[in-house]
Length: 255
Image 1 (tube, rainbow, N blue to C red):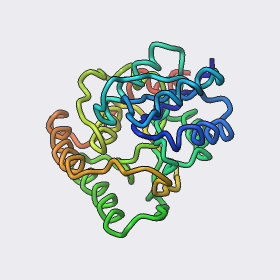
Image 2: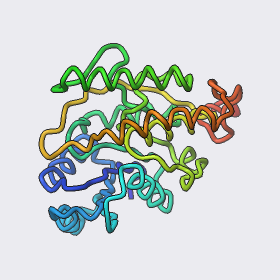
Image 3: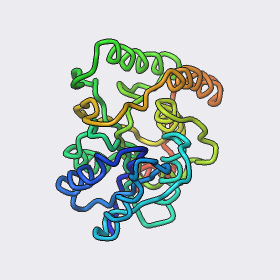
Image 4: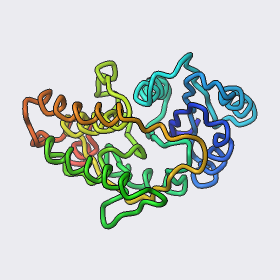
């Protein structure tokens, strides 16, 4: 078994799953993939089962109903922690995240606990988005930074990689958010625990096929979650002075 796992949630992604798996393994042959399917009515789950039968690097976790992106990732994290993965990544199934970027995350994770893919640091790298969607995304990043103090350019992004100690140190059952707010909550929690978070540049392209999962409810949840996170850490807008004892920074200091 490989030590790097890419978790890919799916709901009605029958047109994309075979292609995304092939693309991931072309760029990262050392990675396993866990598809977390929320009972897709279009037959995505059946296709995934057939893929897993012929490719040992492909795994499938079936859930009976659609419960949201955050719940799918939490289920995937728990699955990964029950096995021997050291690097646990997230990405979308629709090719908005380029599989060719996965090696960047593994390289960066050699000296970081959490690696975030950023569309905005050092320039804007977004393809085929309307201006309004771009303004909403960039504005959300500035809003998160203003309220929480997190110094990251793209806190709502879903292309990232956790080292195992980060997920083991978070009470995953307390993470209740979905959508954009899930990504913000996971990053904020890791940052406030004292883990080292870094960003790597990626290019984001609007999905090739299927329907977007964006909704007004997702945006509203993110707006409120930011304030909940601020209150949860007692209005603290900085991480602790000392790194988490399981952070790669602490390990390097004691070496």
